[in-house]
Length: 451
Image (cartoon, rainbow, N blue to C red):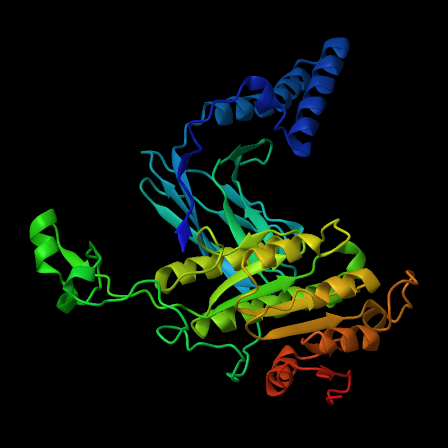
């Protein structure tokens, strides 16, 4: 929940030329009729008609000058709740307008700018706001398309009682709504290569073998007071605690194939959007299981935490999850032709940890390269999406092998390869993949039966 910065709108100086451009159709008609009547009165020598013409012409000009001299001092703010929402979900926007001057305002129209994908532009008519008064209005936004959408700036439209002039004053602040992919709760199935999160890993970076081996660190909020190392505390002059060990956490990499040539079609129900949503579901699920997770794409770019791009524990894990979800909110197709950069990034980690890959169409060379991505230690799950099955259009590239051939070659390399039929529920595919560990011949057909 965040509030937009406040800005003064009433003190904005606009020239008379800008004020004249604010004449409405009614105001321009009055001005034109007055000039015409004055001209006719001059030609015909009719003093009464001249008075009427002057009244019609002067009235819009008086309104222009009055609005130009208006010095309303108002402040506006915006509160967006929440700032990050899943696709298809709603967010609430609350607008607040305060009259900080000693004069009451006239009729005001409040308008907020929103992208068309979030719905129609909200408009509110506010009656007279007393000195020191406040008005609050709200509206809701919703999008089925992930992305980052700016909200604002807030606009205030001033008008005179006769409707002859309208002036628009804009605030400068805006907020950003992040629409992340939909996630699906996954069943808590046992995963090959899982080390139990904390404390059960195969390696420990630090070990306690006596008081001389203690490596102290500064006390942090929430640390157990029984771990306070008094000798180091007296030496450094601040509270120090024992850092007895750093257990190795289970690692996992989620690989998302974003190549443009690997997917056909578009829209919320396309194969690529399914892969993005499924990758987000896996990231959230593994973080909840205590894994140290990173997101990797075919371009070699990673999202996580720290130099290795793997997420940390506790509060840092929540920040890493937010970073990865923000990355998936705006991720698009890459222009790459292969998975070589992803291969290099995985080899840099020496092939350790669990790997969950979401792959599009693969030709013979990329199928062979994908087979080599399997880590030496840990499970390897591949969810393969076939564009021909999702769009019903045969592939244009003859080098693309049949999807069953791709699954077979991945399975022979030790992957648990799962064929993803159009519109499949990812929870069922996840349970099916975890039920049958990786090994030669381990693959799933579109009917869900293991071959």
